[in-house]
Image (cartoon, rainbow, N blue to C red; front, side, top):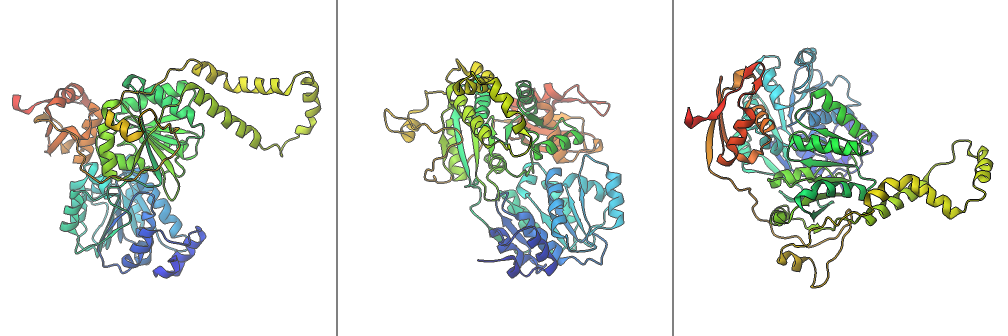
Length: 561
């Protein structure tokens, strides 16, 4: 069995790793570190999130630095601010016993002036999001001439978010690099093209299977009517009283609406979406990491790069259209050797999509029953009893009050006391679920019924339980696309947009999904957007006539101009 001592790292890095309690490297670390510390080999590392990729490239970067040089020598590019901060946090731990090493995070949503001042003070490693890095390059505020190592972390996420042009621009502006290291959970064709164009005979390391979901996660779904979706979500939360999870929605409107409803009903939850300021995002994420919030509800764009320890459940309020998005959603749980549950709320028409995702990610999905009202009350009651029995009574002068309690309850039986305690704790649940209806949809496709159970019997798996089935072969998964039309809009690069930020802007404004869009052609003063003809009118209604930085937006069919 390999150890960190056998990987060839400097002693001060081994000291930091030991101080962190790490003894055995993860598979991606074991395979990548000995190659990367040579400093001259391009590498493509394919591994799921939560497998230790940051240490796999972070430790070699620190190993290769020339500490006496106070200019950027290594550049790490990642898709989101949250991931940017996480990488810097881990690098700070790894360099604990290295004096003179400076690591800087640069990202949007905060003062660029402060980041420019920090760059001028001298740093060796820069961790950046693409948009802010390009802004610094164009301002000539960062010197990439001496960059020797470029890391593209979560490259598939960056391409999904429309950053391909930005990545190529960054690679073109680091001409003296000795090595490019690309880390990704999946390998879409766009990444292949980038590796062929900008990397020289890269070594490819794969840990686990590409395009597969985490095997530590139990993938479950239940079927309900569309109008029962919110009620089914509530019941699932109530049936798992110890839940610590993320709920994914397609739109920011759904994220905000569901968050407000659940908050009014007493749940510890908040929303994360594109309308929040950076300060609001930081506040929400801080509360979630500290577990002041039990639940976070988020859109896919807002949740990119979230890495929080101990998430027990991921809930798909609606299935995503893209299987890659499903993989990244489910990857928020079951990390670093822990187990988790990814549960999807679907209607009967979406069974085919479940099968497609199941085959693509090569893990079995388990159909579960939505618990009855009595199931929920029973689960909550057992949870309360466990908390009651495990309560710490070793601190506090409880003995002083025992005689008074005994006197007060002298004529009350133990059974009655227990009933009164249960009433105080569960009156809301008992009343709410007293006449709760069955939310399960029974009429599902015959072939799925036969697959699930023999005639006359259906196995009932409680939510949060587990059952294993053999994997099915992989197949393609792609949403349907209609004919495209071209829209004109009077916004362009002069308005401060790059392609990725413009894409996010139009999707947030219109509450449409990325798969309805085709090519985007951006000019200085205006842009043209290819869009599915069935979605064009919704985008025009949502954007035409609105204001952006004091300008009235004009959007219309380019063929009608």
